[in-house]
Amino acid sequence: MDQAKNLRDQVAKTKTHRPIKVISITSGKGGVGKTQVVANLALALKAKGQEVLIFDGDMGLANIDIIYNISPKYNLKHLMDGSKTIDEVIFNGPDNVKIIPAASGIQELTELTDQNKMALVDQIDQLEGKFDVVLIDTAAGISDNVMYLNSAAQSIFVVVTPEPTSITDAYALIKVMATRYGEKTFYIVTNQVRSDAEAKTIFNSLQNAADQFLDSVQLWHLHSFPYEEKVRQSIVKQQPMVKFDKDGAIAKSYKELAEKVVKLETNNQKGGMQFFLKQALMGK
Ligand SMILES: Nc1ncnc2c1ncn2[C@@H]1O[C@H](COP(=O)(O)OP(=O)(O)OP(=O)(O)O)[C@@H](O)[C@H]1O
Ligand SMILES: [Mg+2]
Image 1 (cartoon, rainbow, N blue to C red):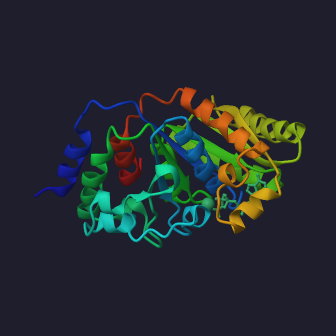
Image 2 (cartoon, rainbow, N blue to C red):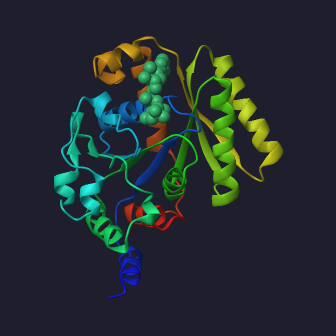
């Protein structure tokens, strides 16, 4: 049996499904707040009645588990080796946010055997039509896995902080995504800023570099979160900010971001879960 062809046939099947937004939350530098954004945005979207799936794409450290205080038994790896079904692997998180936990320490997605890829596509296929938004928590940096997950997503959110290395690394990531993968649109989320002016300065420096060196790349300053000491406390308590300080400024800000995400026009050329997986697994 030609497994590669089989896989292609499987992912090429067209199905009618409700519109889904597949968004990757990524960054050049590590530790800028990606997992914070994913964990809290998921809950804020859920509060707006959206069905949300978190795909933990950080194969190194599974830290969504820590923020949600959950310990899933199974993960992506069990889907790939066919030992568990999607229903067994999907974890029911807080407020019924669904999570596909990361497989720790697996090789590059594109290097999986055709059999593993097929097992994965087969299972993920069953999710079609069940979610409004999929949030992909990627690892930091420009490894192949991160690039594939980003290019497979319909929208890319780049989280960046005032630290100079965070800004230069965010630019490096945007540059690779633009030049090697043809991505044209990036949504910038500034985080841990001390003022609106600081957020604007970060965004402007990215935009100036993009205007000068990258061809027809568009950056949007989607949202900004202030530096907030309580974030650290919420992590210690293993409670996401929108619950830990539910009437605070950060929780309010997540409501606003969720509103923007609901209204966000996604790249229609990229389809649903099938498209996402195909791209991520084939490394396009
Ligand atoms: N708005 C904020 N205010 C203050 N501190 C913050 C804020 N957002 C994030 N942090 C701090 O940054 C740390 C890293 O956040 P997080 O784990 O979400 O980053 P990450 O980008 O997912 O990291 P990694 O690259 O390791 O996956 C948190 O532990 C927290 O201490
Ligand atoms: Mg993280």
